[in-house]
Length: 386
Image (cartoon, rainbow, N blue to C red):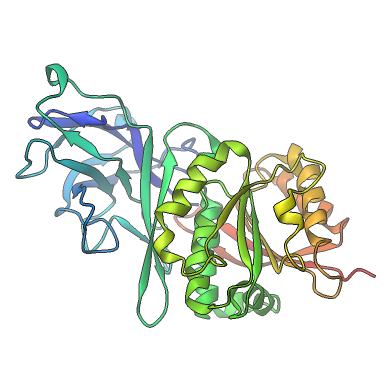
């Protein structure tokens, strides 16, 4: 499992340009239901809001130690010193990290030790203005961002900025399996799988996801879109084929955030065929959306991460999978790639239900993070239909 630095009490949208900014940091699991069990150093830095920044990722001031987070003081309000040299009217993001070396505010999806430390967080911009009424803070922020490094080709790197809500909406947060599966996809694209992950199904997944020719891929339950964003960035380096698509689907409520995240990272997608396309797909709907049904020759791959948390949805999910599989020619069924972290043992009934539609899953890898339940990577193989 992974742990995340976030804000239990976020900073305000604007503040007076003197004194300090008050926050309450949090270190917890993806759903913020399990606090980190131990002591964790937290560093702060500031990232100037600059529309003409030279780097493809946010730059930060030198990190300074802010506090040591412990459960015993989890609700403590902490003042954060303002940026040095701050001028009236400037905007900065507050950055919290688990260490102060290198680029601590960037999550490296290619790192072998991914998730050993809690993931960093960036606030939304804070406007520092003396025109703030009475010197009081503005409204509390309702969103955060995290930045992910995706190695591309010839030593180049892409940087994904993914926005999340601070609310408890499940489709508006990064979940462990989204990061774990994205990391595995980076490794798959690089061809650097560990011997333990050299499963016979892995080459099939690589062909379906990263062949230079056009590929049609659909993600179910995309949430913030991190998996599709990673796929789009990686496919943009290996394919110049205008055919194919990446459909990133979820419920209507997820669309605004999903559309924002695709747009915010648009420079990483070189072709319409590699740019993720947000689309509403409700598993409870009796029919697939027309834009899904009309994909030429069906899909090469179906991708899912953390779609198992609600076992009551399994019949609808399996029915959707069956409908998607049948869009492809019988002799060329899609490969199904699943990122999964167990939250309840009953979730594993999905594997048996999938067999009823001719899909057999096999585990091909995992991401351990900070310990506890690992993110498991499973590949589903479809029986050829008559």
